[in-house]
Every structure is written in C-alpha cells, then in structure tokens.
Image (cartoon, rainbow, N blue to C red; front, side, top):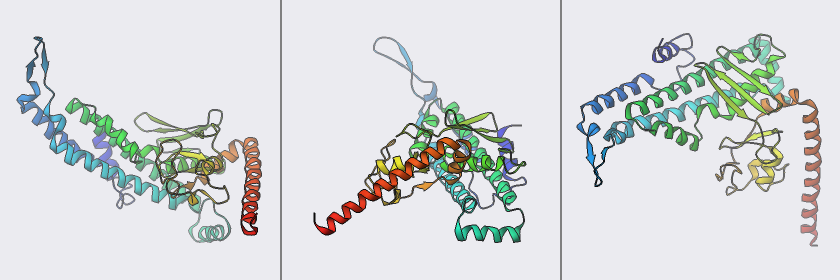
Length: 334
C-alpha cells in the first residue's frame, strides 16, 4: 500500500475522533500541487533549453520550476504552518498528559481521586500516549516524503533545505523534548506495567545508559536518536531542563551559563542570556523540567544519580551561603 493511502486510512480510521481537533499534513493536497508543477515542467521549453558558453561548451539552463510561485507561496508556507500547528498540538497534549504522573502534594491527592472515579488511570494515559506517538510519527513521515517528492519533481535540494529551516524555527517534529519525555514515560512504565514494555504500536523506545542515548524506532524503518549528554559538563544530563530552543542541559550547568543561582531557577535569567549551543537569546523564560526523563535516569543510573544529587545539593548550599553573605554585606554596608 502506498503511503498516501496509509496516511488517509490513519486519518479516517479508529483514531478519527481523537484526531478531530488536531492539525495534520495535507499530504494529498500537497501532492496535487506537485503534480501541477510537474505538468508545468514538462510543458515548459525553458526546462530543456541549452545555452552555449563563450568557450563553446553547452550548459543546460536551470529549470524555472525551481522558483515556481505556486510552490514558494503555497507549498512551503503551508507546510511550515502545518508543522507549527502539529508541534503546538503535540506539546500541549503531552504536557497535559504527563503533568500529574510525577506529582506531589495536592496534585498527588487529586490523582488518587481521579483513579477512584476513572479506574486504571495509567492505562488511559498509556493509551493516549500511544496515539500521540503515532500522531507525531505519521505526520513526520508524511512531511519527509512530501519534501523528498518536491526535490524529485523540481530537481533541487529545496526540500532538504526546508528541513534546516524547520530546525531553526524549533518545529522539527521528531526532535521535540516532549517526545523525549513521552519516551521516558513509557520506559518508566516498563517495570510496573507489563502491557507497556517500552513499546507503542509500531514504535518503540530504548535507553542505553553507557552512551547516554535514547533511541526511538518508528514505522517506515525510521529510527531517531536523542543524545542525552549535557553540552556543558559533557556528562549525562542530571535534573534535566529543556530550553525553548529544544536543547537539554543539567539544571546546574544551565544556571551557570545563564549567570543565575540554582535556587533562583532558570526562569529568573535575563532576556539577553543565550543558549550555550545555538546562541539564541531569551530561551530561558520558557524552560521546563523533564521530570519523566529525570525519573528514568534515577532508576537506570542509581549510583551516578545519587552522586550527582549530593554534588548539586552541596553546590546549592554553597551558592545560598554566598548569596546571603552578599545580601548581608549590602545591608550592613561593608
């Protein structure tokens, strides 16, 4: 079965009710745009025109379809909008799904009450998680295939370059930190729920603590690796936080890069502070803690996690003492 038929079957299958309020790649319509461009290409004399150079050599002119107004104005603009909408839907649903799984205090009490009235709450979370993984995977595959088709039709690398633009706009679907959180959630359930076993339909997650890499296997023989190494300390991320640009760091390392005390938190960083990797400014205000990933590392790297926890607490005490000493000197005046 061709992917277009598989994708249509997915959109109108058992999950149609779940996908009703979700955005998706308009795969069939975008393919029609490419077919229109292909007809234009075959009917255009400029596509096969040749130009004789001063040295007598003959060079084929570039196909004018490379700058096709239909594709430039409709194809890439629409695809960027769809990617942004898909990424936004996915982030908000995963955030809502996982916000009570690692809960404390009143939130834990609310979760217990929900379990009393709704039955197996974790089973429902796993079911929705499976649908979210399939949703992001199917749309990512659709986008990859339509961009590959674009390059084939036009004989360019504009489709491949568009992937770099998606990365620059932080809407690359399979690189979302929330997908890492969802994968960590599944692996955390592996020990307590035999039904999960780290798999979600045709997708699966695995974590190798030796090299700090999480691997996600997807349909269509796709595999994505997530490097869980902090770019600052070059060790596995501890107390991991994701900046709004998508890069992961230890909280202590990120606070150091943002010139804030660890007890103040990343959100207290000034707006001009930049990500240590991509150098984008203002990425600390919307940073968030990857609690599921933190729990996974705690369970899989117990000894190392305890050592890192002790080191972070010692540094926090040191910074707190330093901070209050400075405040005391400021108030007293010496």
